[in-house]
Amino acid sequence: MNVSNILVLLPINEKQKMLIESAVPNAKYTYETYDTVNKKIVQSADIIIGNPPAEMLSDSTNLKWLQLNSAGSDAYIKKGVLNNGVVLTNATGAYGLAISEHMIGVLLQIFKKLNVYRNNQKLHLWQDEGEVKSIYGSRVLIIGLGNIGEEFAKRVKAFGAYTIGVRRSNSRKPDCIDELYLMDKIDELLPTVDVVALSLPSTKETYKMFSMERLKCMKKGAVLLNVGRGNVLDTEALCDLVESGHILGAGLDVTDPEPLPKDHRIWDIENIVITPHISGGYHIPETLDKIVKISAKNLRSFINGEKLMNVVDFSTGYRASNK
Image (cartoon, rainbow, N blue to C red; front, side, top):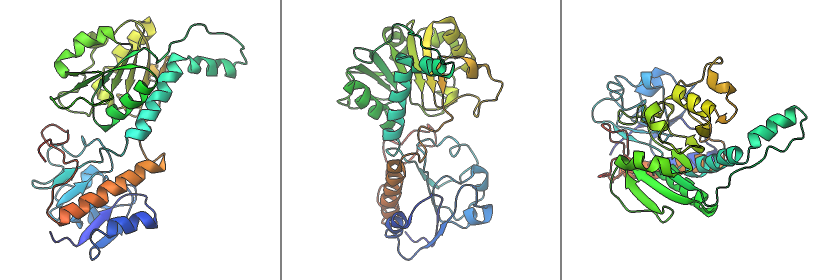
């Protein structure tokens, strides 16, 4: 396929630029960032690699393909953002390492009361806070078995956990998962597990999936982790259930609303560990390297008329299984 203008919105080095440009040596490449790019530049591009401001994409008649640098695509599948016929792909596969390690860190912080001991340190308080929990022997329910969910399963299983996975459709059971179910089994599984890990996109089906009623189904003393999208769960209900002691604690890298207002009650709940949607990003170099490799491979495939990795189904927000 003929393309002339390729816009890259990634903070990449010269070596990474060479990898991308080797796919289409004769194209014109423009390098910008999310903050510096303008609508004129966006609308002149045939291909965009990276996440442009969604509001700049309307009427982008030249655009043929958008390769996101994120795994989530909810801002770009909304009606009117992209013209009909534009191919959308995401960066699934780039974030599993960074986010799964973050999840392990937060889980250990809650299980071992490290947040409590950190607060004690600030108070110069030498005090034994008593019994803690172990990942070893814990039953861990992972809802959403994409790259992030599978990578977390591998790591938590290495600690000796028993892993239970839930996904939308029937497919192979990964070796890192001990039991695999479909979404309709969630309520049966919640009372039986010690950790619930959510790695779900924002879709019509996942919106407020974890309501007060469903959160109450969790085993008393269980921990909730959410690294997908904040609107998957009812924030106020979570606050109530952690404060009451029904849920031991939560680790949230995503929230609803996001960003959190300074006066939101959740900031002051000790056993809720909050990070500002940073578990992915470019905080380790491996993530950006993987995004560049995915983008370069897809660019070469696109030009040659071959199948692309990680094509997004606009109707579901998930990767299309038939692409």
